[in-house]
Length: 318
Image 1 (spheres, rainbow, N blue to C red):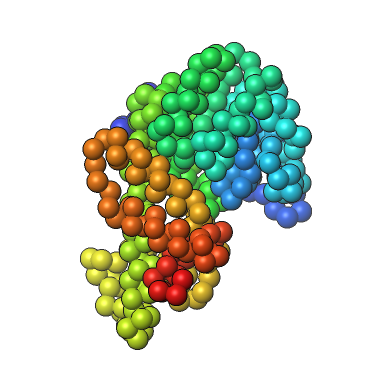
Image 2 (image 1 turned 45 degrees about the vertical axis):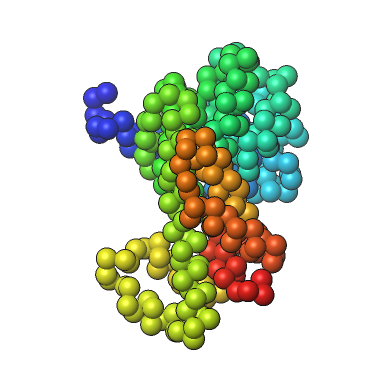
């Protein structure tokens, strides 16, 4: 397509007025965005941030969340809060699911069934794994929905900044693209339905394995009486350094485990990765070990904290 970069990557973003505390999302003054009616099912850490950017891009937004209180900040920002999934999707151009797992997505879409209409676009943006995705795609086909497999790469901070990377598999649809442009810095086109979810498992595996290693190393330093600042002095600026390492080291040293991506969600993803790997005949020993660490950290009360809190699994009394 003229004006677009090569490699299937979409980088165009609408120019929007940034919200302020006094005027959160005045859609009448939003510039350069064609209005799309969006239904967002799921307003947790990621969904809430994505919803704000959808509003900021000038789209109409209906939201539903199992716990209504978590949807109320979006209501204050201009979204319509629906009592149930069916009310949320009624009249929407595109339905976005951003829920914890495949079971939660299937349950929400089952509840929305009476209000779905043939030709509606469904952007499935949760990380659900390959087995659950098959069932969701079948549901979409049965109801005549345009199904886009579109998990995102990124955690709380890029979700809030609107700089997620959207991995999009399946048919290209302008309605879904409007959402992707609102929530992401780029969209990577991966091929057919399922290809995006396969890529997501690979990318999240990297993040999970890296986080588990950082947590283990910092726990080892504590156990051996090594100052983490000395470890940082050795690796900073060298080939083993990275912005991610620095951020996670800083979080542990400060004792700040504010969730960007929780221990519980990371543990869930280790199971999705292991299931897909098993079916592909691949051993993912590091991922399975990371899952064990996350389960121990969760059992010790850290499940709702950022996944670097897997650090606590390094101590034998946890």
